[in-house]
Length: 401
Image 1 (cartoon, one colour):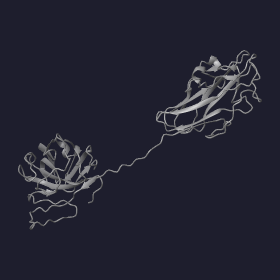
Image 2 (cartoon, one colour):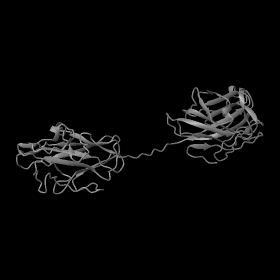
Image 3 (cartoon, helix red, strand yellow):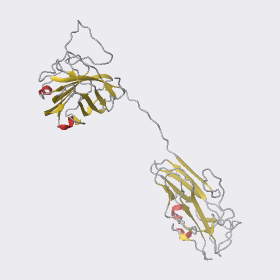
Image 4 (cartoon, one colour):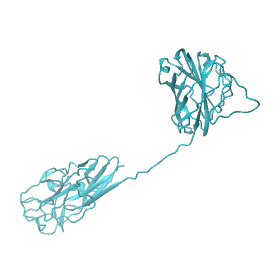
């Protein structure tokens, strides 16, 4: 078997009878672990693996190790020992990998039967190098039974490279309580054994930047479904076909009465997490020199059905939110007048340096199929002084990221 980035397998078979190695010769079998001579009764649990939740060697790399191995014979298992070492040889001195620990009070979760049939007691030894699990009643291991449990909150070695886990199972708890690295059978002869090679490695970090985006445009093209930014821009004339507020009993709408019906259309799209607010600000009401036409409803900023009495003169507008696309646009209540013959004007707020909110989105949005619309109204009275009246309105979009 090979090893993946996060799961390292150390699969090998151990010769049951003792063998002799002449002189200082050492037999190396690829990347597999070597085992020292062991009890003739012991067998190698195979396959076996330790699944690491991360292979990072960072000091704060707290990981989980899911341990799985198959027992090779039938017995009642009362103890399991896993010793984490810099060398793989069973029965040899075990040196703890730098920075490694299973924790002072290790946390172990049993995942499947037969491990889940009993509550195991987990302790650590040798400065967190050795995990000892005991269960006085024991669990029934049969040939090819898979033991499956997870060691929580393990600290990986802080050095890059290979380290090893030596695994022993016992039919008596004394096998774990009396365990030492150089004499693993001091308390009781182990039944199954095996080893796993693991490795820490560098972590690859992939980053990508998403820029804040805000698309906002204002145009006055004749309304057409599906119009999107950019559109053409021209002044909006209020009045009859000549742009004159000719009748003192008629409220002239930019969208219906002028020679070229126009809305101010607002194209808006943004990835702003908390949405976008569109504000309007104006130089003032309709002005001609020293003469002016004030805001509708006394400029109080509330919708009013357009008066048609000969004594009333006013200017106002209403806002219709865009539709389509993703996200939702909402017109501000002060200007969401609904009916085409209802408008508003807030003299105080529109005169502020930052303007008056007229439209908003709750979060990211794409440009709608139909843009937000701003429809203006103007009316003269029988006593309105002659002149060319004008105002300038600025729309400002602000994203909250």
